[in-house]
Image 1 (tube, rainbow over the protein chains, first blue to last red):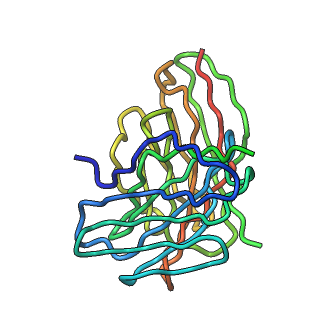
Image 2 (tube, each protein chain N blue to C red):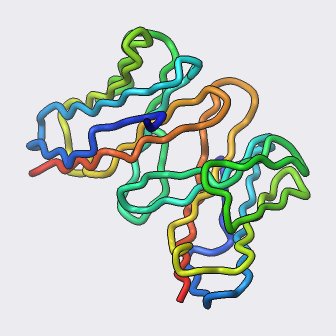
Length: 108
Length: 113
């Protein structure tokens, strides 16, 4: 079993829609959770982190964490074609564990 | 502006060569990591280091070694390159204070022929 599992997609949404990306983790000792965006051929860049149960909003992005269910999600509102990328979920306890990523395409 | 810099963006090496990948960070971070990224397999941890001269094996250390002689520099060494080490290599660093956000270098695309 992988430490961090993501729905691999690909996920396609029309421009302006909400994109929902999901992630589960197995290590209950994980304390912090991260969403990275990775454009093709580029390195990952941090979008958001969350470490408390509940929602955290930053502009069009909302991260949600449910520690009881060991579940993390990322919602992207008003999706734009520039959001088309692979999104990596990561957990951190004593080291980072990354999911394999979800490919998102926003269709104009 | 935080910076993690990898020495090469693209490399082509021959089978059996010794290969050095260099990573330098300017954020005074304690922790540094080397990953490789392959389609469908995601980011896999090769080695990491919590301090100068310290190193820990990650999930796939076979065929690799590392060196950390200075805090800002973490080198990945392929002792005898093989074609199955063709991959994208990513270096990352984090600090010990606050939320441990990982900052990534730009990546090195290594091809072993």
